[in-house]
Image (cartoon, rainbow, N blue to C red):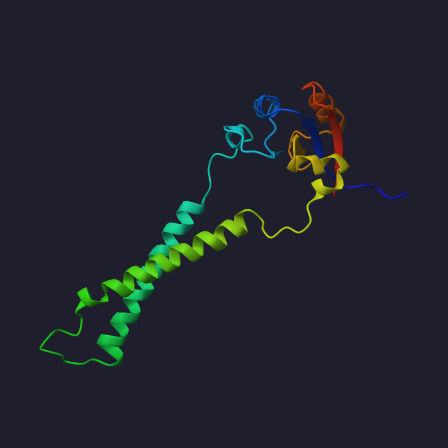
Length: 178
């Protein structure tokens, strides 16, 4: 007999108001590993499932800072250490002319950090996700709303969590196999 690995339990709802209320109730009940799927943006749904903070702005700041320091450092090394030229009696460390390079590398560092940080933090690319194993999940891109409680949640118990989700009056509760 093959033992199935459960990724979580998923409940199907028909309206954004229902899934939003269910997400609030689920979060208030103590579940923290929650995910919601919707064909349209639902205001407040991200906060309801507990997604209210990300480290991405901090990463972008340090990516920009690293880019700026790299640009300034390259200019300083080239003009002061590697190939110093006395042009018009200006000092070797004449930093105002390095501002464009420093600025451009600051923007480049921040932009690259934002793109690759977003991809990494979202776990992308994801060609396969366990929720695709639920046959009804195909409706998530057209007219249905889904709420998933993951099995790695500390409070997850298959029978109790299934009873909890059924108490939210969804159209159905489905086991998501990993």
